Image 1: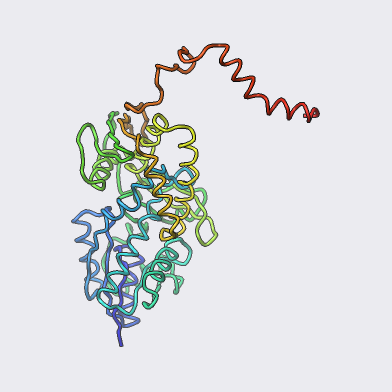
Image 2 (image 1 turned 180 degrees about the vertical axis):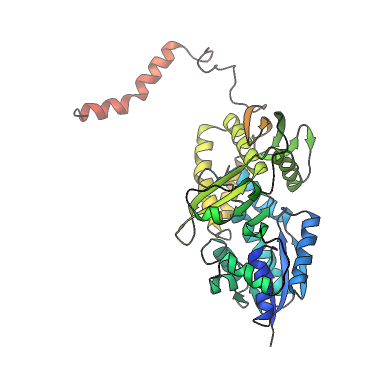
Length: 397
């Protein structure tokens, strides 16, 4: 009987429990796989590997999907200025599908009969993993101990202690998911509606207090330079910006939203580079795109973010929206100046040869060069025609 099982492993409490439980209680040969989307250092990946083997994994692999994640997802989230509920840069939501794809491909490669994840039954990730696994490998059975057993975090900790698994359980009280596009943080506080996360729950701490202005360079919508230093790799420049900005503890917040399964949920996060990149890009777009480009891009970007959040990345319309979003970026090139401060940032302004605030025509609230007062009177007269007709017919209003 094929007892070979691949577990999507992060090294956190839930997946640590899964390794030990699936091996000891179910007799599986557990192959752990971590799909790195850019949030882990080499030292962290090494520590995760050591943890997997300590827990009893038969084999462990690191699957690097950082570049694929950037090219096929992050670029479009920047083009669309996508923030879930105007707050959350869809960090975990967007990376899960790429982690799931990489994991299922590895399972097929080693001819595993089973695949597992550590998602609970009360969140979105279970849908994202299950749906991707089912679409790409319906023949492989999905195993979900955390969801099926309905265990609390404390029960998982107690189970691991029973097997003398030594770990810093105080840190494991918080579920931390690190990725290129931000880090999510869940704990007992996010299960309430009125408590914030303590400072120690966030991976990054305040290290810099002096204000600093940085220059971000964009070319056709993509971030390509910081303070005049150009980067060929998208993931590399995001990591660099995050290293600079996270010292100011920028990008902390708690997102409240509707889950795929119909309940409300709260999750803490820190996303210094994503929030700065999106807001800087959006400011540049305000100067370089027309009103109707902005309007229609916002409509489609909102749908793109919704589908991405709700595990529908593989829906064909997503490729159509990506084509539209990329086409809108032709003139989104220039520099954006951002002031970094402890816990927040300010957008100072932009420079671009495509800036539509062109003083050759007019300066808002100041001078006019392209039309006369009589031109405005005639324009207003024509513009008001439909309203005049309506209010003439409906005199009671």
